[in-house]
Amino acid sequence: MVNVREITSLGRTTIYKLVKSGQFPAPKKIFSNRVVWSTSEVLAWMESRGVK
Image 1: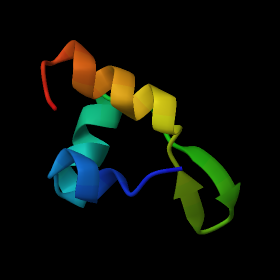
Image 2: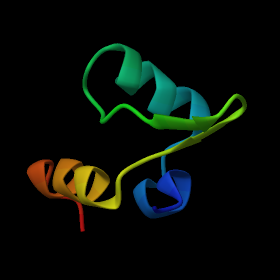
Image 3: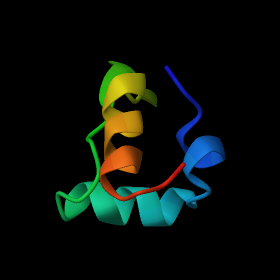
Image 4: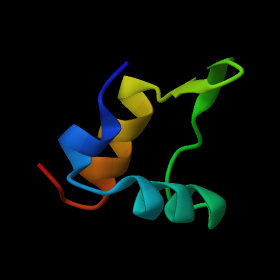
C-alpha cells in the first residue's frame, strides 16, 4: 500500500473525482472508514501518464 496523496501530489478531492470518473484506480475498502490503494495500480496509473 502507498500513501496516494504523497506519491501523486494530488489532493483528496481530486483523487476521488478521478476515481468517480474512472480515471484513477479505485480504492479497496478494508474497514468501514478506511480504504487503501494497490501500489502496483497507482504506479501503473502514474507511468501511463508519464509521471515519475
